Image 1 (tube, one colour):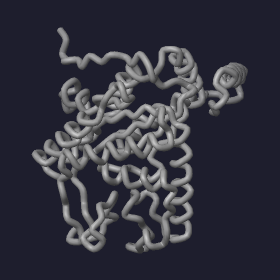
Image 2 (cartoon, rainbow, N blue to C red; image 1 turned 30 degrees about the vertical axis):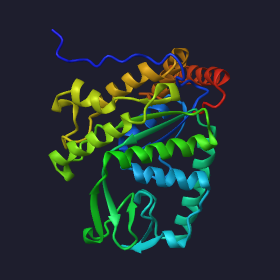
Image 3 (cartoon, rainbow, N blue to C red; image 1 turned 60 degrees about the horizontal axis):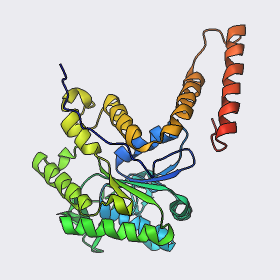
Image 4 (tube, rainbow, N blue to C red; image 1 turned 90 degrees about the vertical axis):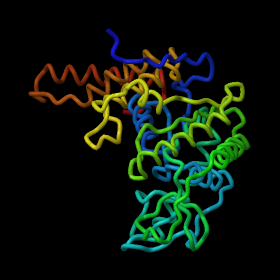
Length: 316
């Protein structure tokens, strides 16, 4: 008996990710799960240099800024709760030093510009269509940083606004990298703080907007992370205790689906060897001074040297 309704996915025949690829990732916390897998298997990647970004206008704004090399200034910062923040980035970058924050933001801006220029793939994971407009500046923000709610207007972005934003991202990125492959996906994380019905509205707006943009002939693709979670893993056992975020089992399952579609077959043997080395590095011996453990470490070092001779950028 098959207890799952499986989503059948066809592997890409072209434009797959291999060990020569560079992958840039933007978006919600789920994009970080994919980035962690890429990092574990030692693929070249850069994920969320400005922290987690949930809504499309925030992603568009930072990509625009990076491509135009529009540096952050003191006018982009504000002080609250003993920390300096920017409404355009996640609070993970906030710090007690204004100078440090500016330096970090502008360093990451340059890093993002350069990485987009060199990347083969850009993965954008959208989390929500609900956005917050700062009343004082009339600007949409990426993060409210615990500023009082009364200073924002909460808005559900219309489908055409999201679609236009995604099209703008494509045009901007292609202006400095005409051959890049762009993958859109929707985060399976349920934003239930907005409400059950509101979460459904939000996800439906994102999915509808993305499908107005995707076109494989133009190297614009969709990966169904959301559908795998909602339609294939239809069980609360695949969620964490909060019943909102996918569990590690679910993340691994969706990664395996991503792997089957987007990772080139010629990379599989290298991934297997990297996995062996990674597990070896995590191994804790009963007797670190034993001859057996010394032999194990020697073998592990030889494996690392061999894999590095095959893929020079891999570093353990």
